[in-house]
Length: 171
Image (cartoon, rainbow, N blue to C red; front, side, top):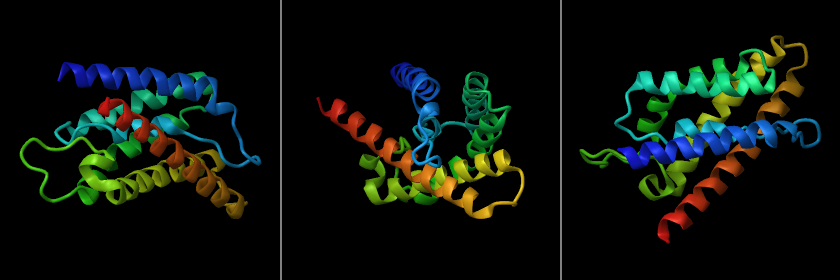
């Protein structure tokens, strides 16, 4: 339990720092902004209590909000994602996961299941984030482009991080 908590703390620090210092300044063609800190909710073990997902999502979102000046948008979207992540994990994880549960990854869920899980969570997060940022449907097409491009870029970074974690775990 302790090594897993230590790894999660390490990834939290790295991803939040990368978000605040690097990713917040990337806006590809004025639309796509990566938000890979969503990965912090995706990597929690299946035996993690639901209240912890919500609390962890709120804390991570609040920290990103404080350093990004986004007025609570990240905290609200991450809190919402914390509510639905256990449901998504259960929907996309294999039925034969055993009593020990799983830590969501391409190894435990296969790449197809993990990609669907991560893509759905990323799409939900970016949709809630940009709906709150726009707070109107005045320019729906622009908002949908923001959601689609940011989700795709975030998913690409999450898959890259997962690939790096797999290579490090192998040795």
